[in-house]
Length: 194
Image (cartoon, rainbow, N blue to C red; front, top):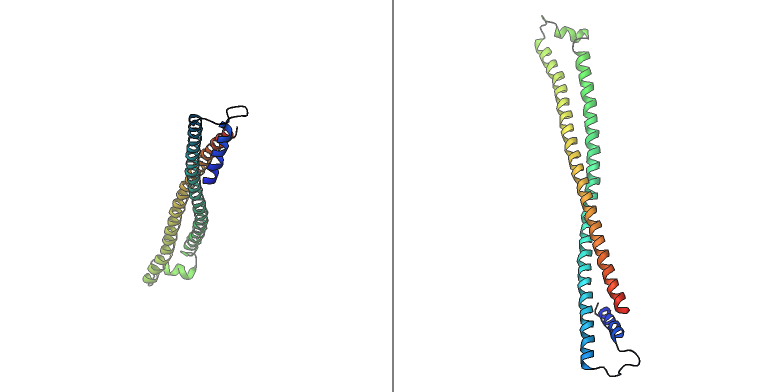
């Protein structure tokens, strides 16, 4: 960087150096004025370089956050697919158990005899009813839990999509600011070169 500033400084000297036909020995005031101009240009370029460096860092940080958000979105989408799959499986099981409950509740004669009123197998009837109803209740609870997981995962997905949008906007703003500063630096260099 010091070499670049020396090059800019020597270019600035060439621009402000006396032309042919002028007094070959510049005065101390002329030299001091030229050195002042070179120092001002060096300071301006240094300031622009620092600003560009800071904006570049902001851009890099925004890109890192954007990449992290995108990775989280991939994970959340996978979780969402898994939750939807589990929910579908739980719903299928609930449907099967509900059908079994309906079909086997009293249609078969051997089971039907267990459920007839004067049956001596009241304990068996109670046990069977608890098992069937328990299966349906368990399946219903699984479906409800799956729906809650799915809703939570979807909410996370929406939040991450919003974060991704914000991070993308910040990266674009940082890139635009860095480009503006780079253009200003180039304009300064072009001005020095003449």
